[in-house]
Image 1 (cartoon, rainbow, N blue to C red):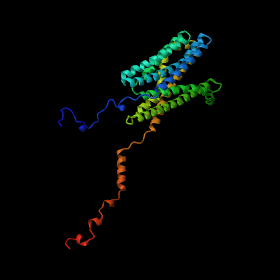
Image 2: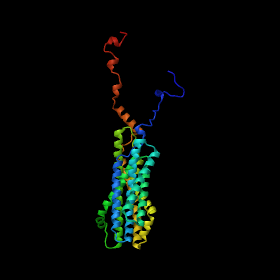
Image 3: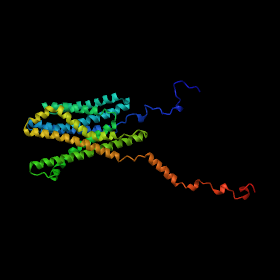
Image 4: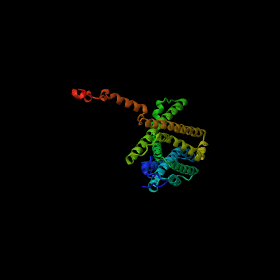
Length: 360
């Protein structure tokens, strides 16, 4: 059979051809994205409803401004996480129907974030009182949802899903932790003096951030492990996620908290300034809360990343080196009896004297 010039026969090629359509070469989807979208939508709805109830129950306009400033961080964080979760769901649907392209994924992610942002802004404008603070809350919430959707446009969808899961768990923990603040204040020595109250508040905040970081890291690792098991069941040859994915997933909740603080200080600057101008105590409270949120985000970032890496490291098996292989071969060689290699004398010398000595 003749060979065409410039072509190498398949039998003579030493490198296997890469199949672009093989499942292992495609980006991995984020499992459970639809469930995450529903949960985060419920959380965003709860934050919007509680903020509305707090504002409408205020007796005067100045109190409504102060309550709006206090409630803004919770709404922005919920919108950021919800936009990312809905964008992940849209990205999975688009990838399943039209293939996974970077441009298509990013466009779908932005579209999902915009959908959440517009729905939240419309709900705020329709249900809140028509004040200057309402427009600030609506616009900042819409911007946070769109930014969350843009974050979900990353190519490593399982890592983004882990960040959303860990962030939602962290936000739920912060709300649940508020019930344990009073006992912890007494535990850390809060007394009648102002200094003792400040010291106790500092230790309570650090305890909350530390536990939230550990929880974020464990949730991120658990989600990525679950995603890995689902992928292996469908495609046993799929490449595993490396340690940077676990590092980003563990640090993701802290990064989202810091990103939410940036959005609050840029988009909600006018509302924070109005609340700080009410009185000197309000100004001190807004400054203290802003500093506490930044510290909390940094703690959750580093503790979550470290926890996820430690959990991932415990799943690794020790690597086998060349020395180990040599040592194993030597051990096997030592187990072989040297006498087994020597020929049997009965086979070399026959017992018949005539055959043993031809001269006779």
